[in-house]
Image 1: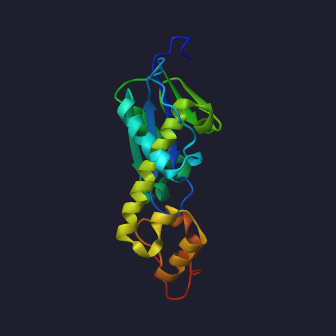
Image 2 (image 1 turned 180 degrees about the vertical axis):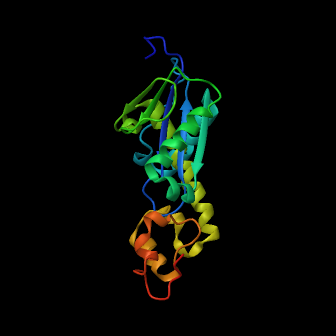
Image 3 (image 1 turned 135 degrees about the vertical axis):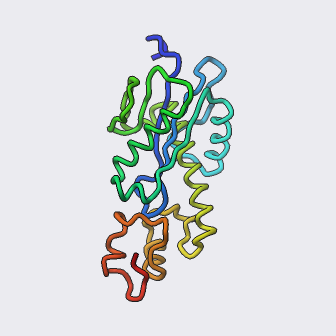
Length: 202
Protein backbone atom coordinates (compact mmCIF):
# COMPACT_ATOMS: atom_id res chain seq x y z
CA UNK A 1 0.00 0.00 0.00
CA UNK A 2 2.86 2.37 0.75
CA UNK A 3 4.27 1.67 -2.69
CA UNK A 4 0.90 2.63 -4.18
CA UNK A 5 0.99 6.02 -2.47
CA UNK A 6 -1.03 5.32 0.68
CA UNK A 7 0.40 7.42 3.49
CA UNK A 8 -2.04 6.67 6.29
CA UNK A 9 -3.27 3.10 6.73
CA UNK A 10 -5.89 2.61 9.42
CA UNK A 11 -6.56 -0.71 11.08
CA UNK A 12 -9.89 -1.43 12.73
CA UNK A 13 -10.94 -4.30 14.98
CA UNK A 14 -13.40 -5.23 17.72
CA UNK A 15 -13.50 -6.96 21.07
CA UNK A 16 -16.53 -8.48 22.72
CA UNK A 17 -18.79 -9.83 19.98
CA UNK A 18 -19.39 -13.09 21.79
CA UNK A 19 -19.90 -12.34 25.52
CA UNK A 20 -23.21 -12.58 27.35
CA UNK A 21 -22.66 -9.20 29.01
CA UNK A 22 -21.11 -5.80 28.44
CA UNK A 23 -20.53 -3.67 25.36
CA UNK A 24 -18.83 -4.42 22.09
CA UNK A 25 -15.71 -2.24 21.75
CA UNK A 26 -14.11 -1.20 18.46
CA UNK A 27 -10.86 0.59 17.84
CA UNK A 28 -9.29 2.22 14.82
CA UNK A 29 -5.68 3.33 14.67
CA UNK A 30 -3.19 4.87 12.25
CA UNK A 31 0.42 4.15 13.10
CA UNK A 32 3.60 5.63 11.63
CA UNK A 33 5.19 3.13 9.26
CA UNK A 34 8.63 4.62 8.64
CA UNK A 35 11.80 2.73 9.44
CA UNK A 36 12.55 2.98 13.13
CA UNK A 37 8.94 3.74 14.06
CA UNK A 38 7.54 0.21 13.97
CA UNK A 39 6.37 -1.07 17.36
CA UNK A 40 7.80 -4.52 17.93
CA UNK A 41 5.55 -7.22 19.36
CA UNK A 42 2.19 -6.19 17.91
CA UNK A 43 0.11 -9.30 17.14
CA UNK A 44 -3.38 -10.65 17.56
CA UNK A 45 -4.28 -9.46 21.05
CA UNK A 46 -5.50 -12.93 22.04
CA UNK A 47 -1.99 -14.32 21.53
CA UNK A 48 -0.40 -11.86 23.97
CA UNK A 49 -0.23 -11.96 27.74
CA UNK A 50 -2.30 -9.44 29.69
CA UNK A 51 0.89 -7.68 30.77
CA UNK A 52 2.22 -7.45 27.22
CA UNK A 53 -1.11 -6.19 25.92
CA UNK A 54 -1.10 -3.48 28.57
CA UNK A 55 2.42 -2.40 27.64
CA UNK A 56 1.60 -2.26 23.93
CA UNK A 57 -1.71 -0.48 24.62
CA UNK A 58 0.14 2.49 26.13
CA UNK A 59 2.84 2.45 23.44
CA UNK A 60 0.31 2.36 20.60
CA UNK A 61 -1.63 5.30 22.04
CA UNK A 62 1.61 7.26 22.52
CA UNK A 63 2.99 6.69 19.04
CA UNK A 64 -0.19 6.64 16.96
CA UNK A 65 -0.81 9.27 14.32
CA UNK A 66 -4.44 8.94 15.43
CA UNK A 67 -6.59 6.42 17.29
CA UNK A 68 -10.18 6.13 18.44
CA UNK A 69 -11.96 3.67 20.73
CA UNK A 70 -15.76 3.36 20.66
CA UNK A 71 -18.30 1.30 22.62
CA UNK A 72 -21.82 0.12 21.86
CA UNK A 73 -23.82 -0.92 24.91
CA UNK A 74 -25.63 -4.19 25.53
CA UNK A 75 -28.93 -2.35 24.95
CA UNK A 76 -27.76 -1.22 21.51
CA UNK A 77 -26.57 -4.75 20.73
CA UNK A 78 -30.00 -6.12 21.64
CA UNK A 79 -31.70 -3.48 19.49
CA UNK A 80 -29.51 -3.81 16.39
CA UNK A 81 -28.10 -7.37 16.64
CA UNK A 82 -24.42 -7.98 17.27
CA UNK A 83 -23.28 -7.85 13.64
CA UNK A 84 -24.89 -4.50 12.92
CA UNK A 85 -23.81 -3.13 16.29
CA UNK A 86 -20.21 -4.10 15.55
CA UNK A 87 -20.35 -2.53 12.09
CA UNK A 88 -21.74 0.71 13.54
CA UNK A 89 -19.20 0.73 16.36
CA UNK A 90 -16.33 0.22 13.92
CA UNK A 91 -17.65 2.95 11.62
CA UNK A 92 -17.73 5.37 14.57
CA UNK A 93 -14.16 4.46 15.46
CA UNK A 94 -12.93 5.11 11.91
CA UNK A 95 -14.99 8.29 11.57
CA UNK A 96 -13.62 9.53 14.89
CA UNK A 97 -9.95 9.25 13.98
CA UNK A 98 -9.59 12.94 13.17
CA UNK A 99 -6.94 12.14 10.56
CA UNK A 100 -8.40 10.70 7.36
CA UNK A 101 -6.69 7.47 6.30
CA UNK A 102 -6.02 6.56 2.69
CA UNK A 103 -7.30 3.04 3.26
CA UNK A 104 -8.90 1.10 6.11
CA UNK A 105 -8.05 -2.50 6.91
CA UNK A 106 -10.70 -4.36 8.90
CA UNK A 107 -10.53 -7.72 10.59
CA UNK A 108 -12.94 -10.37 9.39
CA UNK A 109 -15.07 -10.63 6.29
CA UNK A 110 -17.60 -7.83 6.73
CA UNK A 111 -17.41 -4.28 5.47
CA UNK A 112 -18.34 -1.07 7.23
CA UNK A 113 -20.37 1.85 5.92
CA UNK A 114 -17.63 4.32 5.11
CA UNK A 115 -16.73 6.18 1.92
CA UNK A 116 -13.02 5.45 2.30
CA UNK A 117 -11.33 2.56 0.49
CA UNK A 118 -11.37 -0.50 2.71
CA UNK A 119 -9.99 -4.01 2.64
CA UNK A 120 -11.25 -6.93 4.70
CA UNK A 121 -8.57 -9.26 6.00
CA UNK A 122 -9.61 -12.59 7.49
CA UNK A 123 -7.46 -13.14 10.59
CA UNK A 124 -6.36 -9.54 10.11
CA UNK A 125 -5.48 -9.15 13.79
CA UNK A 126 -2.68 -11.66 13.20
CA UNK A 127 -1.78 -10.73 9.60
CA UNK A 128 -1.95 -6.91 9.62
CA UNK A 129 0.20 -4.65 11.78
CA UNK A 130 -2.43 -1.93 12.05
CA UNK A 131 -5.34 -4.33 12.63
CA UNK A 132 -3.29 -6.08 15.30
CA UNK A 133 -2.74 -2.72 16.99
CA UNK A 134 -6.48 -1.99 16.84
CA UNK A 135 -7.23 -5.40 18.35
CA UNK A 136 -4.96 -4.59 21.31
CA UNK A 137 -6.61 -1.21 21.87
CA UNK A 138 -10.09 -2.73 21.75
CA UNK A 139 -9.36 -5.72 23.97
CA UNK A 140 -7.45 -3.88 26.68
CA UNK A 141 -10.09 -1.14 26.82
CA UNK A 142 -12.90 -3.68 27.10
CA UNK A 143 -11.12 -5.88 29.63
CA UNK A 144 -10.51 -2.87 31.86
CA UNK A 145 -14.11 -1.79 31.48
CA UNK A 146 -15.34 -5.24 32.52
CA UNK A 147 -13.08 -5.08 35.58
CA UNK A 148 -14.85 -1.84 36.52
CA UNK A 149 -18.22 -3.55 36.09
CA UNK A 150 -16.93 -6.30 38.37
CA UNK A 151 -16.78 -3.74 41.18
CA UNK A 152 -20.45 -2.87 40.61
CA UNK A 153 -21.65 -6.47 40.13
CA UNK A 154 -19.08 -8.58 42.02
CA UNK A 155 -21.33 -11.64 42.17
CA UNK A 156 -20.87 -12.37 38.45
CA UNK A 157 -17.07 -12.52 38.27
CA UNK A 158 -16.73 -10.16 35.30
CA UNK A 159 -13.06 -9.47 36.09
CA UNK A 160 -12.27 -13.13 35.49
CA UNK A 161 -14.30 -14.00 32.39
CA UNK A 162 -15.01 -10.51 30.97
CA UNK A 163 -18.65 -11.42 30.36
CA UNK A 164 -18.08 -14.54 28.27
CA UNK A 165 -20.33 -17.54 28.80
CA UNK A 166 -18.15 -19.59 31.11
CA UNK A 167 -19.61 -22.22 33.42
CA UNK A 168 -18.98 -19.94 36.40
CA UNK A 169 -20.73 -17.02 34.69
CA UNK A 170 -23.77 -19.10 33.75
CA UNK A 171 -23.95 -20.48 37.28
CA UNK A 172 -23.94 -16.92 38.65
CA UNK A 173 -26.77 -15.93 36.31
CA UNK A 174 -28.81 -18.90 37.50
CA UNK A 175 -28.22 -17.88 41.09
CA UNK A 176 -28.60 -14.10 40.84
CA UNK A 177 -30.55 -13.53 37.64
CA UNK A 178 -29.54 -11.02 34.98
CA UNK A 179 -28.03 -7.61 35.73
CA UNK A 180 -28.26 -4.38 33.78
CA UNK A 181 -25.32 -5.11 31.47
CA UNK A 182 -26.41 -8.58 30.32
CA UNK A 183 -27.38 -8.88 26.67
CA UNK A 184 -30.98 -10.10 26.63
CA UNK A 185 -30.68 -11.51 23.11
CA UNK A 186 -27.70 -13.58 24.27
CA UNK A 187 -29.27 -14.84 27.49
CA UNK A 188 -32.79 -15.81 26.44
CA UNK A 189 -32.62 -19.18 28.15
CA UNK A 190 -32.12 -17.42 31.49
CA UNK A 191 -35.08 -15.05 31.25
CA UNK A 192 -37.52 -17.23 29.33
CA UNK A 193 -38.39 -19.27 32.36
CA UNK A 194 -35.52 -21.72 31.93
CA UNK A 195 -33.24 -20.29 34.59
CA UNK A 196 -33.08 -21.42 38.19
CA UNK A 197 -36.36 -21.06 40.01
CA UNK A 198 -36.36 -17.86 42.01
CA UNK A 199 -33.80 -16.04 39.86
CA UNK A 200 -34.78 -12.57 38.77
CA UNK A 201 -35.95 -12.53 35.16
CA UNK A 202 -35.90 -9.13 33.45
